Image (tube, rainbow, N blue to C red; front, side, top):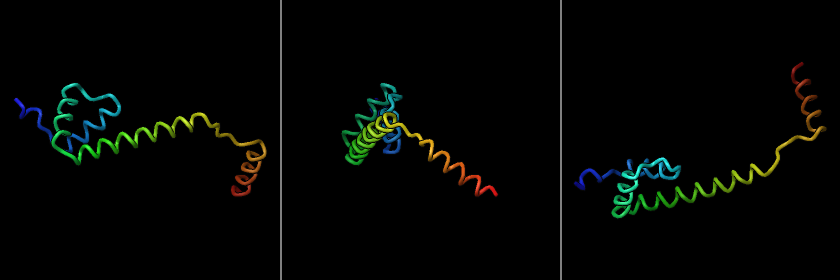
Length: 87
């Protein structure tokens, strides 16, 4: 019975990645939890993956809040530079 729940570290990292995006099935989550009980390396990977995901989410929210637009002068300067390089 437990033989079906045993997974390799490669499978665990794949399930961990799926779990971050809520794509892992219940069976996969159980298999991952059982693997994390015995594998400290995968526990560390899981924690690092969560940390990186949270950092990215925070940074992406910041980028959404900041407006990235050129001023009219910057647009004109860029257009002049493009025209100059076109010749």
